[in-house]
Length: 275
Image (cartoon, rainbow, N blue to C red; front, top):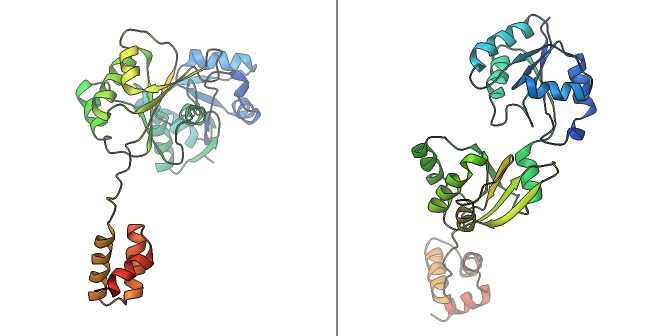
């Protein structure tokens, strides 16, 4: 009988956020697939857990993915963890989960903290609709092309970024998207947690000459929605006349035109009967 891959969320800063279920899962699994075994060892020591680990990260994910899947297929249970947050979210764990699914192996989630959702929650930015863009491409041309594709995006946009690349990313965002509202969220759940609310232009200027430390999430406002040009009463009446020609009654045509234009049905109807 095959084992299970447990996708285990780990703290994004404060180790107190590690759930009892996550601790239990690591204690009971046969081995742990970790992004950086040195980072995970600190977590294991904190909770007095002793388990064998295998490294699994961006540059060995295809080779190690097959090894891990083979062990699960043979009956072992594996806990997949990343350095911080939920594995498989802007993370090579995505490939391991996909491989296990393709091979018909069991995959279960042990939910934990997630940086982009946490950052959005404390940013004060619109959250009803958003798009998670993860890390932008390292290559300048590819990064700028990616940002350009987002020029018309009306949803709030969320990016991950490293401190040493922040200045160039902010400059590219400001150049392509214009001066939008932005929240720079850093060091989530840590002592120096900070939410910096500003604009893209101001942020690009500030961090072109100042350094910033810590893990960073950028929350960028979406493009303003294009608003319909308001109809005049005469235009609304003309629209109603077209509806009448198409078979609608004057009353129904005035009602539809009122809904489209935001004008009063009675005013439009009055113009129709005055013809």
